[in-house]
Image 1 (spheres, rainbow, N blue to C red):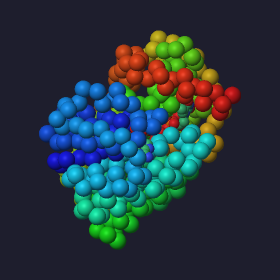
Image 2: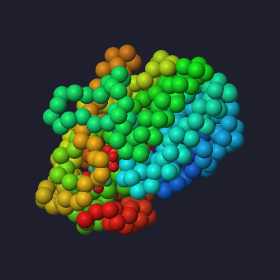
Image 3: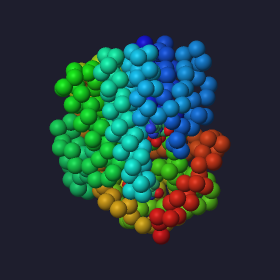
Length: 332
Ligand code: NAD
Ligand code: TDX
């Protein structure tokens, strides 16, 4: 891949991707991140200075984006406003970053003829019925539910149209829910782990029967590397590791692993428009590119994630109070 531009590289998945690239290749990485509330510079500590640069800036800044894209061989676009609940409070940053920011990158990639990989989500496909055997695949029609997922859906459409109309060299991936180290404490699993550490009862939206298809962040990122190596230009790959679980069972696992009674949680106000179930069929990625996840035991991955939050309190402590104050305005 040579020189990489990784947008959103100070966020959860992007920072884990940068560590994976540094540990497993000789590539050089420039991270472009606006260091908003979700960017954390400590996630990038310890990277080799001769192969890594952090540029603080906005993917919507076309002049900056053009200058950075010109310097690299490959762009991997992780940067996004990523939290559904925030998109329900205020959709505008989602429209700006997820749509306009993607447009800015596509125009730069087109001008400089660079390889581009677009990171997206399974939420573009809407939701599935609880208990059905249906799963999302690459031909499932788009049916996004929230401002977040519709802005991601729009960004996917932009990429495909730039491939068809301008023949840019792009691939796309849509992944299911990630968990692992360095995930912001606004998200479900880190929120509950840090609640238990702080003696707060975990908060379950509604009855908690909603199902998410969990994948360890390192498995997501190994799939992205495989797509960069062998993916076919213009193609989309769904990334998932057969990790369906309902939210209630995830909270019970966290409580059990942290030595608490498994019913020591509160039911709180449900998310408006809350998607019921996501499930990914990753057959194309597995058969065409030979990718396999390695962290398929959720309980083991959860245990190491709990351990990470226990031993890295300084990484999340500053954000925790702000996040819980915001949640308190939404939940009863
Ligand atoms: P995150 O919120 O942890 O990180 C996003 C990063 O992007 C942050 O560092 C933030 O500062 C940066 N950013 C936001 N707006 C920016 C802008 N205008 N310019 C520059 N940088 C900006 O999110 P994440 O969970 O790591 O998600 C990364 C990508 O993966 C997103 O595109 C998301 O849609 C996708 N995705 C996430 C999941 C998941 O479970 N978290 C699953 C599938 C796909
Ligand atoms: O406190 C909570 N209690 C709760 O029951 C929180 C924060 C969430 N939930 C529920 C809502 C969801 O059903 O847990 C599930 C997971 O919630 P989130 O972590 O907010 O993730 P989700 O909305 O499923 O979206 C995630 O996966 C797809 C990422 O945030 C997206 O960026 C990604 O595209």
